[in-house]
Image 1 (cartoon, rainbow, N blue to C red):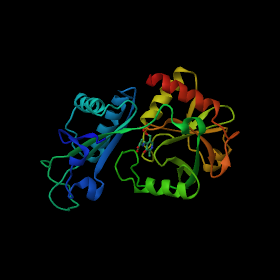
Image 2: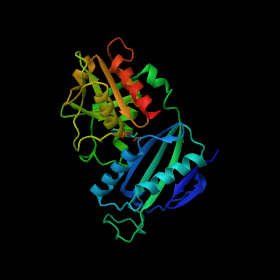
Image 3: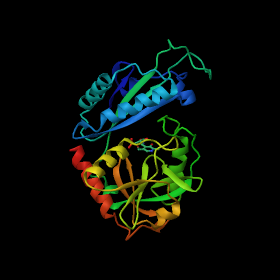
Length: 282
Ligand code: PDD
């Protein structure tokens, strides 16, 4: 069945949603995006995703003309129109189309392009949540502003392809000997004393909305997080390894570079965090 998508103020069947070949999102990846999870027909942490979208736009001088409530309403209407119970909503905002290919930013009068669409998929009962995933490490070849959620996603696509070619489900990216994050997720290891270690926020990683919620939930449940760098070797020797994102929530990692983690089954802390996150989502 065809989805209804949102394009620049209109709700149209997906076949009718057309964007110019001169759109800067297409030509230059001059665009930002967000993915907000939907569970039981409700948005998960929309306020967090909106705040990050606004920050991405500020950092790039990209005009965000819609207010939080307007954008929330668009998300909600798409949920209703597409009868979405579980999955996510993808939002992309580009610097628009100035009628030609030109590196220079167009005039501030040029309208931006805003697209939203729904994606229906299992989030709560995804098999990876109970089985865990296998990851391999590879060099992080992305640009230096990974804190901005831009659509320049060729490096993560290459990392995922490389993971698949190496019999794994996903890749952890490595820079200067330390893991930055996953190809589309934040990464965590659990040490022998049950401390959860994850990389501190900087321009080197995306400031995950799920990560932020996990920190808050951890605090409420007496679970300790330590923000520091960690190496692939430390990950391979960790008691538990897991990832977080809006599309996965919390998924266990059961092997890193072919090295089994713990007994090769999802760890207790990982399962606990997933459970309390799902409780919060409701
Ligand atoms: N990716 N790091 C990277 C590089 C990501 O692409 C993502 C999310 C995250 C987790 O952020 P959050 O918890 O806010 O989803 C971390 C989304 C889901 C995607 O690109 O589809």
